[in-house]
Image (cartoon, rainbow, N blue to C red):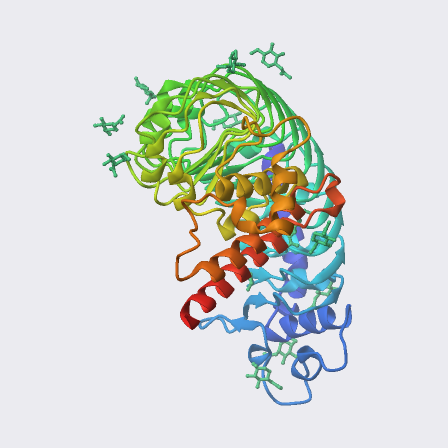
Length: 512
Ligand SMILES: *[C@@H]1O[C@H](CO)[C@@H](O)[C@H](O)[C@H]1NC(C)=O
Ligand SMILES: *[C@@H]1O[C@H](CO)[C@@H](O)[C@H](O)[C@H]1NC(C)=O
Ligand SMILES: *[C@@H]1O[C@H](CO)[C@@H](O)[C@H](O)[C@H]1NC(C)=O
Ligand SMILES: *[C@@H]1O[C@H](CO)[C@@H](O)[C@H](O)[C@H]1NC(C)=O
Ligand SMILES: *[C@@H]1O[C@H](CO)[C@@H](O)[C@H](O)[C@H]1NC(C)=O
Ligand SMILES: *[C@@H]1O[C@H](CO)[C@@H](O)[C@H](O)[C@H]1NC(C)=O
Ligand SMILES: *[C@@H]1O[C@H](CO)[C@@H](O)[C@H](O)[C@H]1NC(C)=O
Ligand SMILES: *[C@@H]1O[C@H](CO)[C@@H](O)[C@H](O)[C@H]1NC(C)=O
Ligand SMILES: *[C@@H]1O[C@H](CO)[C@@H](O)[C@H](O)[C@H]1NC(C)=O
Ligand SMILES: *[C@@H]1O[C@H](CO)[C@@H](O)[C@H](O)[C@H]1NC(C)=O
Ligand SMILES: *[C@@H]1O[C@H](CO)[C@@H](O)[C@H](O)[C@H]1NC(C)=O
Ligand SMILES: *[C@@H]1O[C@H](CO)[C@@H](O)[C@H](O)[C@H]1NC(C)=O
């Protein structure tokens, strides 16, 4: 007899021998699910008035399927979804949860779960959505995480996972969303992630990942729409082959240690809406191929050591609303026809070497809410049209862009410039009479002497309302420009105050 046949017989005998045990073994049912959920309940601490305390009980004849956060499948009647998001639950995940064999969705986002995720979870073969964002899980991402054959969505963002992501983590060929932002991951990005060919979102922002990005990392990611690798320690050149991520809409590589030129292939990513490459040590110019980015809305290249003439096509791109190029080495001048389309909302070019006049056509930029051109080499006067555009958009603060005292300072100076129509470098300011001092003296001696006479006239019927409004703005501007940063108002309060000044002004006008 051949060894293989013998082997088969041997196996068959073993099978028959076990058969009675198999037949008598109970298959899991909804009772299994109930004990899994009760195990979860007893591994967490709940305040006495927490909804789960009296809801997740077996004392009422109701089924597990009626428990809050639990959804059962229509056909099999087993627990298919567990959504405990935003429930203020503190505790750990017991291994029993792995018995929820019909679970498709597990959402425990925004709670106080801690410890590690038990390996038994990988028994949930049907799991498609796993959202554990905003908890306090810690430890390494274990290798078994790659064992969910049906996982489509994995979000472990804003936890305290650490160590390197295992290089063979993730045989997750169905994954579309992988979000691991704001943890403490170190080491290289596992190459296998770039092989998850259905991936649409990859967010690894805010870790300590290092190393280069692999060449042709986009070759297997044709569906990728969102890629955020910002706030890491990645280095080297931008990899070749980025044009293969042809569906990319958002690309953020901010705050890394990338170097070299911006690849012209980025100009082939015509779906791109938001591009953030700032805070890297790049060189060279903005590629001309960027003119092809017809869907681009936000371009952020701040503090990136770039150079070259400010390309005039930037101002004529069909969707571009947000141009942020401060602290580079750009030169040249602003185009005469600065807003051929009125889309531009944010223009920040501080800290470059841009020269020439600020074109009066700036008045064509009717959507402009933030403009910051300080620390350049502009000549001439600030155009009157400057005063007709807004000052700062509320969302600007939310983006965290004007979060430093340095910016609040220039904001204060800008407010003074607008209402006095003077620049700090104006001829009338001899050595010790600065624009700031002039404004603060004017506040004592009568604000009208500092205000541009074209903005406010004594004989106007709204004179008092206007004068008091401008006084308030000057007071705010002086606070913004306090020598010592800790004496300056913060941007949030400044915006709130500006808003209040505006409302008071409107109220006074309607009184008249
Ligand atoms: C589930 O299985 C257990 C053990 O086999 C049995 O006692 C129980 O009655 C079953 N429950 C349901 C709801 O079928
Ligand atoms: C638990 O909460 C659900 C949803 O709010 C409700 O339908 C159910 O009746 C509650 N069950 C108990 C036992 O309170
Ligand atoms: C469920 O899982 C736990 C721990 O993983 C295990 O002890 C238990 O026997 C399992 N089965 C049932 C039916 O609860
Ligand atoms: C989890 O719940 C949160 C809050 O309800 C929700 O925003 C998020 O989309 C849910 N995640 C999944 C994968 O459904
Ligand atoms: C996520 O973590 C980041 C970095 O620590 C933090 O800035 C952000 O506020 C967190 N988000 C939430 C909703 O807690
Ligand atoms: C990625 O996939 C390709 C082809 O599907 C394969 O040749 C390559 O070895 C894979 N790379 C990794 C790191 O798994
Ligand atoms: C990339 O864009 C250039 C024009 O800027 C074009 O000549 C080239 O064919 C494009 N490449 C791909 C792969 O689309
Ligand atoms: C900035 O770019 C120049 C070349 O344009 C290069 O010489 C210099 O080293 C770069 N600086 C940094 C900090 O990368
Ligand atoms: C802006 O672009 C359009 C084509 O998109 C072109 O016809 C027009 O001349 C350009 N205007 C300027 C000022 O460059
Ligand atoms: C732009 O401004 C100039 C001069 O201020 C004006 O002549 C021109 O009509 C404006 N263009 C548009 C499109 O508003
Ligand atoms: C700034 O402008 C002045 C006056 O036009 C010129 O002399 C100087 O060279 C310029 N500086 C730079 C850095 O372009
Ligand atoms: C500026 O305003 C902030 C907040 O209102 C205040 O705390 C601070 O004392 C002010 N500074 C001065 C010099 O008035």
